[in-house]
Image 1: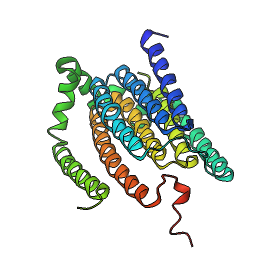
Image 2: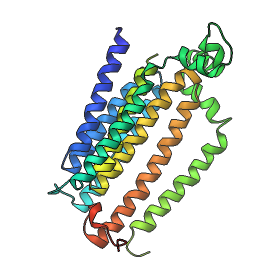
Image 3: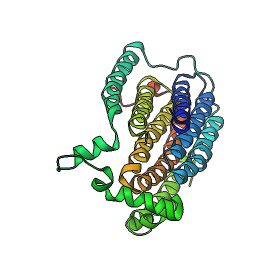
Image 4: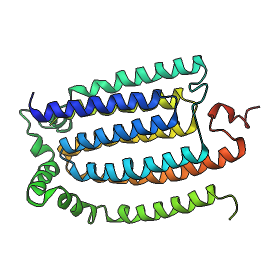
Amino acid sequence: MDLITATWWAFAVWAVISALMCISRRNPIASVLWLVSCMFALAGVYVLLQAEFIAAVQVLVYAGAVMVLFLFVIMLLNVGDSPRTLKRWPIWIVGLGVSAVMGAELVALRGYTPERLAREVSTLSGPINPALVFPEGAAAQIATASRGVVGGIAEPLFTGYLIPFEVTSVLLLAAAIGAVVLAKRKL
Amino acid sequence: MLLGPSLVLSAVLFVIGVAGVLIRRNAIVLFMCVELMLNAVNVSFVALSQVHGFSGQIMVFFVMTVAAAEAAVGLAIILAVFRHTQSVDLTQLNLLKG
């Protein structure tokens, strides 16, 4: 196991433990702090998956902005430890069962490698090179090597995905107006 | 490349989020579990973007924007609900129950 794989596993275990603590803590503030910890671990995972820009945005937007918003609301509402944090027992047993089944199904994805993915997507037979089946992936590797990961993302973001990117600003404006309208007592 | 392990990490985090949504009573914790599920999906987007090119990472960018918008509106709704019922306990929101 090389260093990158070992570090990846450390971050992955950190993320899963933080997520478990997040859903099991009685106090909502402890939950928020564990979720922040989980998001930092995921930022580490993103760095090891060669998505440094996403890792930086993860820390800034999620751990920074969104979770601070959660903390503000919890402190504003003065939500403390509740006597009962779980739903009634039949409901939460069923909930755990449903999630266990879903988890067992999703964990079946563990055997995937780029080669297997390419073999399932491609119609050709014989030995398969993932770089030929997914030319965009190979092009992305070259773009990252020459311009860095931010330069590589910027090009498709501001050409092919320009209209979704601009529509995002409308979405954020609508969300901001909606939040003010909903949270204000009197307009 | 760590594709398989990343997909498993994504699956495990998603399932933890689902379990949280199903078993917790606190509306704010429920929202946090939704954020956890969005993060889990982001992990698989990023893992697959190593194979498929930058589209996955751009999609993560959009998911983060939608999550931020969703958090802002959702928390405003929780504030409005709290003003009515003085509680964020979902089991007490039973006005529509016959």
